[in-house]
Length: 188
Image (cartoon, rainbow, N blue to C red; front, side, top):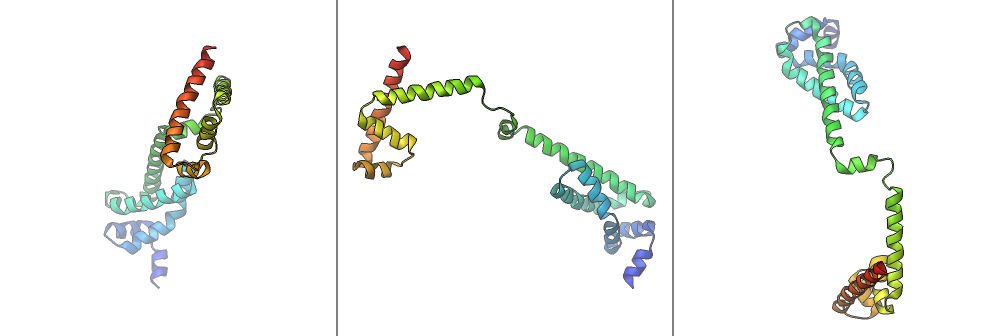
């Protein structure tokens, strides 16, 4: 019976009741406008989850601010105005957050590698391979195991049958020898 009375009530009387603190009246207003509020938010944001979130925030804000509404018969347009402002604010805040994140900017680049950077990377790889070829077998195997195969010091220790400390020393020495070979190749 209460539902029939509420549905028969005019929007203006529901707004007046909601302004007087009647939560059921505000609930009925929210039920009547939920689709319209969602549609407005979705048009602005073009994202279902964001539109739902904004819709919930709109009704919370409307419930808090309904006493500021001077013309109860203008509730629908007032609510749409609140929805538009909140959706625009959300879109602007979201855009600023995305625009300032370096990872996002890097991911949005159409071409992250230029022909020059590809050529330089290829040249470096060739030089490192040539430098590795000029090293002794133990140095080369140590560097390849660590940097190419990605083995840990413990795995290398087991594979080379040497203590971890020895593996660390071999890596250090092998890196220095490779750097020297690369330096000599660059000068040649």
